[in-house]
Image (cartoon, rainbow over the protein chains, first blue to last red):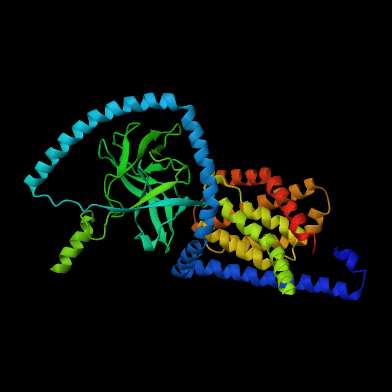
Length: 299
Length: 170
């Protein structure tokens, strides 16, 4: 039905069309106003908006899961094919790595023994064992603006805000929103992610700053820092969000002179994450300031 | 009883355009088997919004555009209200111009989408940068827009098929 035609075909249909036009225009104004109200609310009532977000994501989680499953199946077939093709080469590589690992294992056993003895000598209080929850990634959200994941574990599984999100290779982010059955992880590559880090080899400090690209930048490194390409970047434990020495990635100098970090975990292909609770609230990793504050309160 | 079934049938058919739009929103955050697609994933929901605002605005009113936008904000962790505002606005503009886009060839529909998507993506980038008060890298937004324009015929073809299969009896 075209409006031009109907306007000639009688009063009633013309009236119906203009009534529809009017109602369209009226509801347009209503919903534009509502959107603006939402925009203002997100600034003034962030807690309410966050709660709306987590509840909606929780409700949508089964649907996101349903959409993710067939894609995962395709990915599995793809990786099966890739693995089959490179079976021989991989086998050889793993054999060599295994031989290397056995040497390392021997070293670790003797070092662990030595470490234990030294700790006993010092009367060192052992760090609490971290607890963790494994979760599946069901959505990769944010498009060009936010680097985040939605995973299938929430309050009922013991997930808390601030938990570290890791893969077998290293740190990938932290939990920022927790629903009942799902949570949202903000990746280390996100524009708003800032993590205090050190270089494992030299102990130089810096801030790992995400810029939405797959390789976050290193900021505020001391000028005399002896950063060399390939140095290992780990969390420093400052700021009390992460414990020290979680592996993140290796240092890479770009052609433009900035220093970036190549995360050891492949941020573009995360299917499972481990959400780790290091219990930083009362654990051994608490920052010195908070301990001092607690001390002064006691006095 | 028959009447109930008929009503349900009609109601389900009428809900098709908005359901497709929601499904595309969910698909756009899916963990696709292509690494690094996430940051440049084209806005599939906007393709649905464009198509249905032109072809069945009676089944895709401003309220649905608003809800779709809000859903997009929630799922993608964008500042709440940005997409809701832009989708409602885009719906209105596209709806007013629908005869211009729809009356001609597919190429016309496609060009119209290219224009709408480009304006929409730049506006979204501007708004989010302004709200966060920091410059968000533009390159991924550009790639998103180009990808959206390139893949447009595919979801469009699916929606044309669906429209013929589900809504032609009305």
